[in-house]
Length: 589
Image 1 (cartoon, one colour):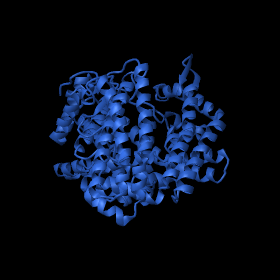
Image 2 (cartoon, helix red, strand yellow):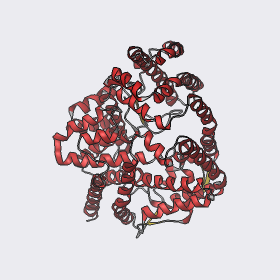
Image 3 (cartoon, one colour):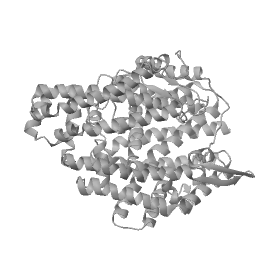
Image 4 (tube, helix red, strand yellow):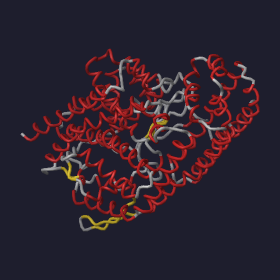
């Protein structure tokens, strides 16, 4: 696998800045043209309807290209005033134009069934699922004037989350460790809570939790406003039975499926109790403390060059399916990977597939650790998912959130198995497994119990309960997930105030657990079936967002309403814990 550059080549989006600016003008022209055709829709002529949808598709593709170009420029250098201005310009323009085009969704959702059916038939398979999904919101859709008012209301409602962000950005967590005074932003806290020194971890947590306890009244009241706004719009106005039901609808998941997932996670927590006991032993402790939940245990000295990492990922993908490896090579060879950290560049990692037919862009901050190799496999998996789904229109190109981690997590596990098979350093093998299981806890169990907390908190606060009820509800979820395996200090009852998702996107978190546990179950099936499983996974990925998740999985024989299916994911994790136990026993001999 040969890389073309360490930085992004933007020409798949726009050749240069002039073409980008011309695209913004073209977007305005296209939006006005669609508005001018509004009266044609009211005639309900199938041919005119299909023509309108195709024009809307072209507008949406260009809008996604423009947003991607501006977003990638900003991620490349967040300190660039030009990039900041371009992103703000695109965001404002697209917000303005989407408001002008709101009439289409409102008209289509409210159209009587007998009038919509001929139009749906004329649109064909390409647009069927997207159009049906819009209409599925019909029972929860208000008049055009009311929907426009809600959009305006949401500008102010989002201020709650923005205020939370502003406060979090201003907070400084101050503590002493190793005789040194440390002042950290909240965004920097992770490097101290994951520090090898237990005294540093404890000091960082204590300082952070004390700060958020001190700020609990302000942050708690902001959260109450989020709860009230969600309750008012989705339960009182739109008519959802429960607050979480609205998010389930957005994810196109039936309520019983989500409940089956949460129950399966609750039933599977003993696997992690066993892991926590094993980790405590590895740390030389009788019982794991919550302070040490993410403590590094095995630290291998092995590092990897980016070229070595690429080679390892390519071998792992190729052993599964040659097309997987070929698609991964395409991302790298087209210059769509920004590899190394630098000043002003966004942290973390992502894969961005803006529109069908454009090879996704990957952002990495590669520093040569084993987890960086895993991140490369993860993000290339996302890119492969996008490329396999490229036959769909922009409306159904992206997978729904619960399925968005299928290829990425699957690719990461392929790499993990390959590394465990080929590496000889037992410390590196142990590090790989500890990293995987720490991540599995954080993504599956922690996120599922976050959802349980949100369900309880929304119910209690909507009924006028004091903020202490939210603190207590969160602490109860911690006790339930840790059992007797983890020592739990009282101060962690305020930890929920540190979780941005609760403020930004209520009930978003369970989708992480859904996606991760789904892949563990699928991977276990792959181990049983071998090469026969490969086309099944590729069909799941190629569907993009064109089929409801439960229907898509059912086509391949996976019943996500059955708790026994989810238990397969925990059997995979149990096998990983057993492998780690055997490895640690071997290295201690």
